[in-house]
Image (cartoon, rainbow, N blue to C red; front, side, top):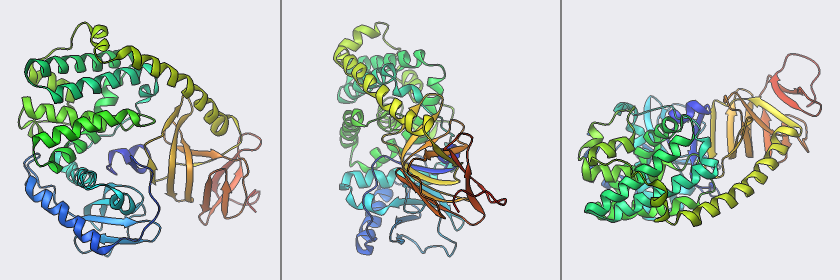
Length: 425
């Protein structure tokens, strides 16, 4: 994940696709091994994809123990506060670094570790390629229709990757048809999806291809990613990873060197359609049947019913019940898996850690306002003091900030200390 465009959505945010493992001090010997692995992969890639070497400054960090390892001397500048909380690309001491959560990296299997390191190293060079974009929410991918057509697209992409000739062309035609049908159902869906595929999909394509020994291995990895993708609880931010890897590898086959021509305004699906001279199949419903669409439709409708109950429970906790509201955080990290939209209220984001002028927040989940201006947590069971706790969260207030009564009875808000009437005293 990059700490650039995504961070413009939620302050300085860097997402992760896995629940963060328990803290572990950075093992300097293993870190040196991983740095050597990354260097070897970068040197083998040699700027082939983007015309720029992926090699560059890397730092492994564990937030709990405040231990780090770097592949070049660490700057004397203060460490970024997000260091160790998320895999990201960020500036530190005037240099752009690829940063990694040590426990996550140490727990990864070698192929996953290689892909992750190269993914983040791409994010490090992404600005100089002109491919940084400010992505936007893809709420439609929480709906039964959005998820249904996306998974059919993934199945067709996997079929295309696994085949050749006319069979591959046919599968691409079907993938594009499923993509077009989904986007036709939701206003602005094409642009919202396109942005995240540029932001994260290109990074995942890079990690997938550069980590692979050859094209066959890259294809196998992309197919595996497409196969595993439906296991995620939500597709809101995760969809671009397998999609980006698949479209990128198919573009390699039909349009070698496309990475040197892509612009931040391009759409990967449209690029593939033009390169392969393919149009979406006209009989999309018949095509869906070839990918077990009827069974998938039933499963998604059943999930939609379960999801309604989950959203109702989250609305009760984060909207209807007593809540504590604080300003947006300039620095935050979260886990992408499990993100849930509450229509009209915002996004519930799990495993949220934030630092702002008002202090530090650690929460099992947080409601982020639609305009990203505020963070909300349930106020039930709240205890008062400079360290405030509630249902699944802890807030350490910074000097000059206080807890005051909110708009409704039982609500609270974090505001600057302007005098008397402090409920946390």
